[in-house]
Length: 334
Image (cartoon, rainbow, N blue to C red; front, top):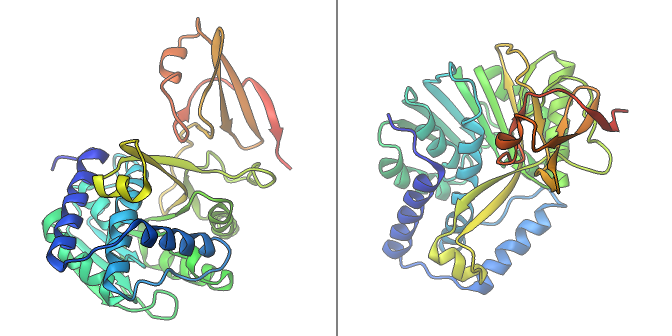
């Protein structure tokens, strides 16, 4: 199976969404978009899901959020080991199926998927989109709360995509424990790339390290995170904006960068991949500097133009791996 690039997949999603909006005669305006944005801003401070009880709200949601979250999940999946070839997946809180669509394009052996969500309207959208976006996958949907419900089975890949931030903090470890017990291979957790989203990821990372669970990514170590004070670890997934999205946002750029934080837990232990670049490289007159995370410190590495690594590193971005030598410490771990 061909693994599609992010742009190609997002264009396909946008076409599916536009077809759905026309078929259902759904219309919304820039004011509707601002109200959705306000709901998401509120959700940064209070663990409540966004109201999607009406068709225009759901249409706006999939038009604005499904391309972004799919791009994020595809970028995360692209970093998983080449020998990880899942055949089964369970997506908890899967909604309209962004994680499943991204996985379907990334993993050629994936054929059996279960999506769990308590919103039947979003699951109906998933069932509508999958024959168009991932026809090779046998998808089962379950209308069930992933917090209070019981999901049985064992899966190669389990995902929690943009879900843990919508539930109370006291429930998160319970949900992740359920997900880990179902997982035979890897558990992928993604959250918004905000301080709150990073706090959610850190809570789960602490839980994983406490239980000696292997953290595959993005961390290069299992020690205490040196970014706990004054900063947060987040990355960006770039995806093409649809004409509708540009109009709703009053935007001129044809692309958007979606910030996210994530964690990948693995049953199999893998050797360290290298140090993770956690900031866009900064150029200076005779080279550039990159900022990376390692077990003891956050480091800054000056790379001069005569350095053999310069050509490749000047094209690097936040989230890439650095395999070069450690230079000087920027922020000591505490």
